[in-house]
Image (cartoon, rainbow, N blue to C red):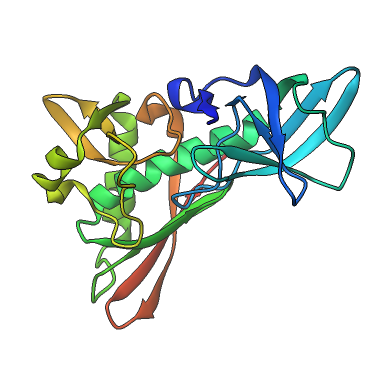
Amino acid sequence: MTIMLFRDDPYMREANGRVLAHTEEGGIILDASVFYPTGGGQPGDSGTLEWDAKRMVIATAVKGEGETIVLVPSEPVALPPIGCHIVQHLDWDRRHKHMRIHTALHLLSVAVPFAVSGGAISATHGRLDFNMPDAPEDREALEQSLNAFIERDARVSDGWITEAELDAAPELVKTMAVKPPRGTGDIRLVRIGEEDDWIDLQPCGGTHVARTGEIGALRLGKIEKKGKLNRRIYLHLDS
């Protein structure tokens, strides 16, 4: 099992770790990871590892078997030995942009009240696919609505819910394409706003900013027709 340090503190940029195993493909499994693994439309983190005056560039992180996270080197090089203690350095600028985009997409799912059928995040923009027959009529109003959520500087927090509690509140699951994981215990919920006055509440395993004001100004991008009942909406960070 890899302890998910980013889950408790998404702002952690450096952390110690110990090498538990290597994968056949040349990946590294640590006992604790500051690197978020690819999942839920959010890319895996990148950065570096340091040990014994050596340095390795990590291109991405992916989910391994069971509850492990595999760090993928940017090129085939000698791996730190099993049992070795290392220092992890996160590419913070890239991760923080992922966090800003991810939280912004949660707000988009509020501003556009249709079921989400897919999504993706990058360091410059993100997009959601909605199960809706027609494009939004007023682009300007939609963009203003999103930026109004951001200007409220609402708190972003997380909590946990049991599978039975989630089954009793199916309206929390907005994403048709990615279902919350089952059989691994409680399910994480991300809340935007306060407990008694929230803007959004949905299952999510990704990393988010602490307050919506941290997202910064957003710009609405293309709105594409991707099928009879599908519209793809892009969001871009202004900086």
